[in-house]
Image 1 (cartoon, rainbow, N blue to C red):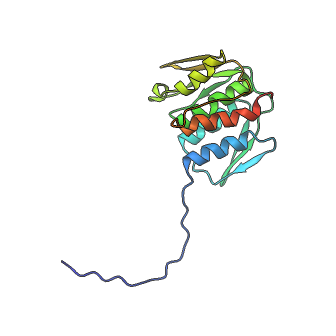
Image 2 (tube, rainbow, N blue to C red):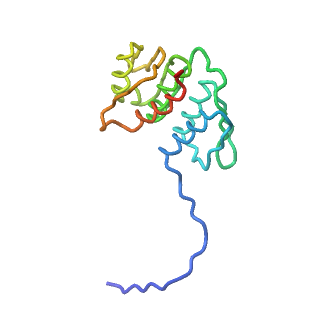
Image 3 (tube, rainbow, N blue to C red):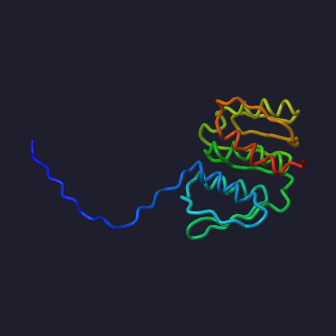
Length: 175
């Protein structure tokens, strides 16, 4: 076996750590729902991030790409009909379902790959308890109605995406 010698050396430079995709989705949506324009960055642009940004625009928000991030402007008046192409992003789907109910009284969500096969039973159960329409099939998911303020109970072992989605929607409800 060959002998290897390591000698200390001074290294200088910068290393850019890519932001967490999970945190970036949440930051973008938080900024998009603020009453004042907000900048978020750095953002690694990806198909999933674009799906979330396109979803914000579908709900009446505005996003402007900037060199190191995105400027988000909250929806003025949400459109009567919301259709969101979530691509293959489960985060986009789970975050925006309750937001669409709170802002626009529902929406239609589509996606690609196996996205529509992913379970949404947490929302389905909650929304059926409120007599909201919840229809999921291989072509997409449709929700309709108005979320009502109150107490929501979820099992502790569900994806945090369901909890985050509800947390994004609660300040948008009337009470």
